[in-house]
Amino acid sequence: MGKTSARWWVVLGLLILSGCAHKATGKVDNSDQPYRIGREDLLDVAVWRDADLSRTLPVRPDGFISLPMVGEVRAEGRTPTELSDEIREALKPYVQEPRVTVVVREVNSSRVFITGEVANPGAYPLRGRVSILQAIALAGGFTDFADRDGIVVLRRSGADGSTIPVSYSELVDAPDKNEPLILRPGDTIVVP
Image 1 (cartoon, rainbow, N blue to C red):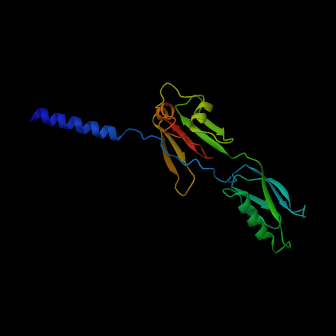
Image 2 (cartoon, helix red, strand yellow):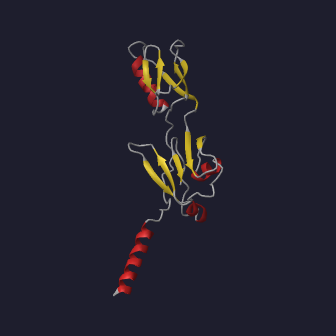
Image 3 (cartoon, helix red, strand yellow):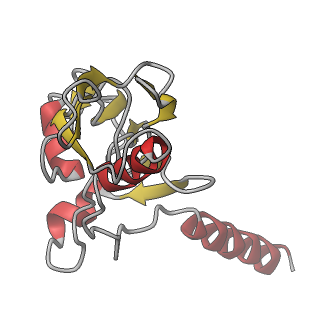
């Protein structure tokens, strides 16, 4: 009875440990998202035929911009079209049929953060479509102690954000089956 009991515990232990293995990346949402204005971005706000109301201004650290006759307007987290619509509505009492255009002149807020067991942890600018593999390369690659299959991406978009497990070996060994994760502004890559 002792050997059967011991074998049962070993099998149970192996089953539990196999359930703790890291998940494959599998399908991820790599669809293009509309650009959302962020802190430190530089905006051109143009009011047609009204040079006094048109401005080039940065988004402040609190996420707002200030405009004459409009006052404080939250810019962070909005698309340029959403922001121009709000400014247009705020100008209606002062300007007859205002036409407002918001253009992002400089993108300064679009960054990803890489921390943990990489050669150069820190913040990196996100220019274009950058995969998780490319971001790790930007950070100088893994250190000797990195858990390559325990990578986690913390995504802050959405109400609560999400945690996305990533297995480096599955991305490299089976690139046909696992689409690499395309990073979004504000993502944090944790390499344990």
